[in-house]
Image (cartoon, rainbow, N blue to C red; front, side, top):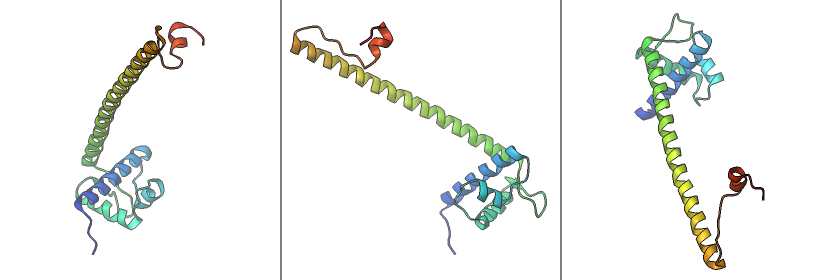
Length: 145
């Protein structure tokens, strides 16, 4: 029998639970394995999803109202979903800070390049030199080129 690494199994369950809760919140109808296969690309067969749904039900994240119905989230399932949304939000804030930091660094590099270029042109021409990114003069000073 093939066994999965525990992390892989937990990631599958996590993605499945997120998909089930998202779909249930969107439709207010119990969610079956075939709906997940059809609407969400988890890369898992219907049979695998059914086995994972049973595991999530045993762990208290999902509930099956009756035998032929799909699953609905429990309070524990909703708590997991909200916590995962908060985690995603935290990652988004961290990514934004990283992007801002990178932009500041790149802007400084461009500024340093412009300064060194203007110094070099001034030394070579023995005149005052000024470098700016294309379009900056028009935008800032109203001067057309």
